Amino acid sequence: MTHQVKSKLSIIVGVFTLLVISILFTSQHGPWMNRGDSYLPNSRDASFTIDVPYQNLLPGEDRYARQKITVPVDTYINSFAPEMQGLFTMLHHANIVDTSESDIYCPNFPRMLFATGNEIKIVDEIYPGYGVPVRKGAVLEAFVHFANTTTRVESGILRLRFSGKAGLRPTLPLFLTIGDYCISSELAGEYTIPAGIATSKTRMQRPVVLPRAGKLLMWGGHVHQYGTSLRLIKNGEVISTLLPFENPHRTEAATSSVYLRRVDFAKPLVFQAGDTIDMEAVYQKPENLFYTGAMGVAGLFFDFEE
Image (cartoon, rainbow, N blue to C red; front, side, top):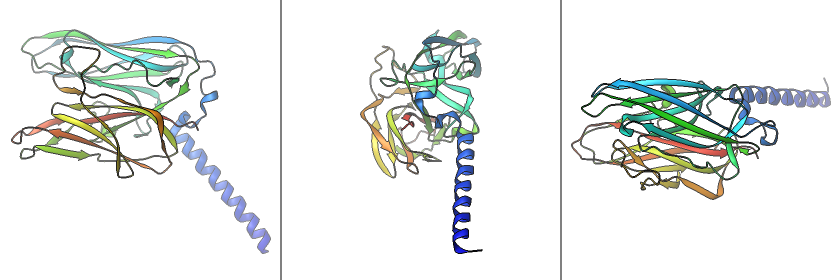
């Protein structure tokens, strides 16, 4: 075999290998690899609701509930509003997933879309001109943890409202947790801060390596009681910090969660394929307290379409 033939053969093998890798990568990560200008060509404005009731929740009882809804049309969700009908303190946390898509962080799990604790975080607009794409017929499922810390039997409903618009650019959420939520969508990654520690700084059990380049539009997060900040770390450097803030949508203070003010980037932050994303949750608690309920959760909304 001549050197020229060997070279041509090497090129063919190389191209074939790249093609196979591309096909495997695309099939693993799903439609989020597609370009936004053709992603949902028939998208429409829409609004829909998931109601998750709880009945006769006993004092001291923890209960997990789930509820599904089928998306009526192709649309881009650009706002999310949780609402408690009953005591808002009954809500511990809620995760909403799209069961028709794979999660970027946990590819064996459905895609995380939104989350909230009893701080009741309303997303009036994800980011100007952007929305989370969901397809007609997709099944959205809410996983909800209710916890009754009162001395009374309680009943009520968690109502999750979604609004979608046509013709937006797609943004895909990358949800991160300090504890590894890939174990369970319901557990959501709680961890323990032992006694003898007053200031705790905890990073993710499993940082993320981005599979492709993208622009970070905004991020928000969630910590529990005693949480003082959530830090976003890119390639070992802190690039943004979420801090406690007064909830603009309600006057009552949350009991087990801290309202963190989200950060929108006027100029989106550029990430390259292979960049590592980590997160650090900071807690200040009584030194002698053995605290089992710490949590650090963040939702990062990316434009992966460039």
